[in-house]
Image (cartoon, rainbow, N blue to C red; front, side, top):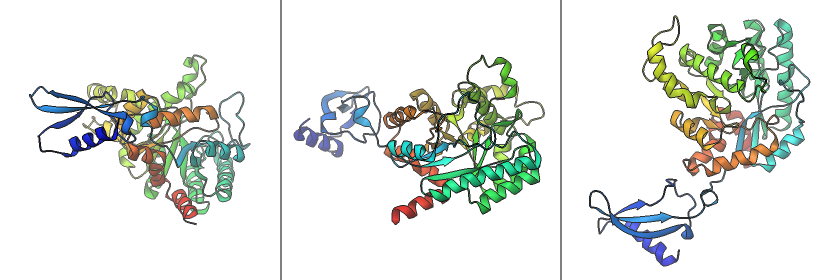
Length: 388
């Protein structure tokens, strides 16, 4: 399209003298973040159903490459380390991992910083042993952050089967002495889901502190007879996340402990797809024995109050469903390094850049700004380094 047509377009879009309105003749309703002259044409005029004269502007160009926003300065909120401490991921063979390998992967994919966690590592021993194990893991995480303060943050591992006093002591040590960036735990522990009252003492302290809580799925023991022999990360992790989110809402725990900022992984499992069904059928069948009747808006509002990382959750169907449920300010980038191999990162980043319902501001928010609000200490270290 030549400059004369661009001038005509500018005149049409700014002039009100002839009373004409502008419409976009395109199935693509994206904010025109990077359309250039060759992508725009004035394709004529017509009358609409109200007999108003309208000018039709057509946008051309490929669906993907021409409308790509830049996903830069990424903060990956879902990253792990491989250590010889505590329990390991349920895999026959653990993937290779090292700090150097992680940094190389980050640099290759525009990731400024990663937040490390080992949510389940101290959940399979009890009592004082669990506390000692959690402390060793948290000190190892703190050592990594100390060595690379602008590239890594870390979430405290909890000794889930220790006494309440022991767990709270380790949480305080991790947050106050080690200065870790938040707390990590799992969707369920021994098949008891977050939202159960036994976790209230944990949540009371986290709520008092306004902690960011990273919740990673595990496979419920009860699922083993019906898991179809499929790796638990494919289906069971999604189902456990779905149960946790539902229980947090139905039990009232999310509302009672509203100052905690809770990250649900993998795009919230099946919750975005099931939200309307849950909302409708909860009105029909209730929330379960002994629970108060559902209050209109509580389910939808409760689910919207969680944060969701987009690990393996960047397809158009997933992103569309998430946007119906949660504001863009509650979406975060996550890649699950090293359990998701390196070749999965570029497609996920491209998915985000090409999604036509994100504008430039949205992409920047999801890439790093939302995470900065959850991890102010990490954001501060990064900002200081940039200023220096």
